[in-house]
Image (tube, rainbow, N blue to C red):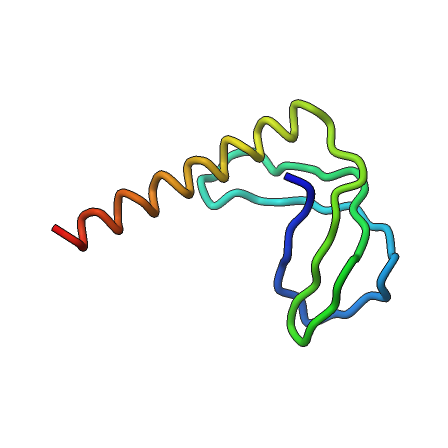
Length: 81
């Protein structure tokens, strides 16, 4: 898990360093990426590479993503049956 893309009406120059705070829809505590670097900019979105992410935050983010994937798989399976 080296980065992410997110929707944004703002655009920042490529190479800009920022702190990201990810708020899981599950209501869990926000996950903080201490340092992310803007790597791509498109209309309405930006892609960032994680430069500094603490191990416990990485673990929490992995768990949130896994839960999203499992939930998506379950919903898709129900639609197919």
